[in-house]
Every structure is written in structure tokens, then in C-alpha cells.
Image (cartoon, rainbow, N blue to C red; front, side, top):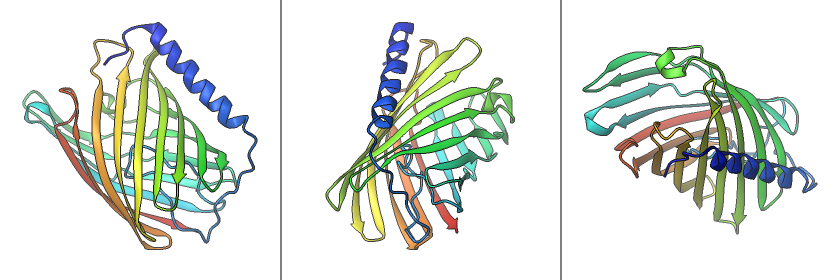
Length: 264
């Protein structure tokens, strides 16, 4: 599936804007999490968390991932660090710091820094017992290697949400739009995930992630993703995950681990 028609992209933009308007106009009271609550992270799933970090806290989410590409290539990156700072009860600053990337394949091999990626703000729209949703407005900054970070700034709009089904199960998702290049090419990223609590401190998930680009000459990516997280302390979390591609342009397989912590 590829988005080859601008009309289709306009529909995606309008659909995401409608979702944002519906969440924002719900006028439900926001119950922000407190510093005493357990850590809640954006990783290792593609779906981000539907809630912001507590006000006055610093959260560092770190990891590393290896991908085996189609036709025998390899991709490795570290440290995949996202910095999240609680500004107010409903607002956080989040950014991805530069990471080291190593690519080795039959047609090309290179290594270098990715640059400062996706800096933006996350606003809490809803945080209730069974429903949470946020709006992320950000921009990708092309400050690293051009083949990794690109050559122009890319506006980003994300809407992550979670719906809790009882005490153990939850359905999560995120709709994202990224504007690529000076021509305004749009990439649509629909993610859907099911999570299950395994214990008071651990959970597992299964996820679908799609990356569809307006330009028919650019490949789309679709992957199946699985993983688990465990809180080793209230403010510390470890994770492990793996997945595989669902079409020929996606990675054959990937695996990763991570460690995150919050400083109050």
C-alpha cells in the first residue's frame, strides 16, 4: 500500500486534525501523574505514551537496536536517547539526542551521527482512568549526516492515545504525519498496539507499525513488533523487543534493548 495521490494525503491530514479536535473538545478534566507514580515511557514501542511526565522531572529513555536489512545489509544504532522534561502538569519538552549509526550492506556502508532529531512539545489532552491522549507538535532538525538526517527541517504532528480495558489489557495507538522535503511530501504513520499487564511491575505488547509515503517512488514500511518492559524500581525501567518486516522494503528482522529512568 502506498499513498500515491495527493487527495489521499489531504484526507489523512483532515482525519488527524479531526481526531485532535475531538480529543481537545472533549473537555474532560486532566489528572496528571505525580512524581510518586511509576515511570511511564515512550519506548520500546513505536506508539508513544498517551501521558506526559510529571512536572519538574527529567526522564531519559535509552536503548540500542540492531536491524538485519533486506539483501543482507545490517543497521545498528546507539544510544537512541529521548529526553523528556516536565514543564507543567499538562506540558513536556521532548527531544531525541544525536545517536551513532552504523550501516553495512552489499551496495553501501557508512557510519556517523544522526544529528538532533524531533524536538517538540507534548500536551496532555486527556488523562482519565480508562483513557489518555496527548498531542505532540515537533520538528526534525537536519543537523547530522545528510543521508541519515536529511537536508531540510520536517514538521511532525503526533496523536498518541491509550484505552484501558480492565486492569490487565489496554489498546493503544498513534497517528502521525510528517512533512518531508521542500515539496511538502507527507508521510503517514499509523500504529496500533495491544498490551497486557503480566504483574504489577511488568507488561508485554504486540504492535503493528506502518510508514506510508505520498511519493510512490519511496518505499512503504510495515512491521510486526513485540516486546516487554519491567520496572526494576519505581523510577527505573528495562525493556527488550523484537520484530520483523511485513513487506519487501521493510527490515527482515530487528531486536533491541533499553534502560530508562526518571529524576524527580
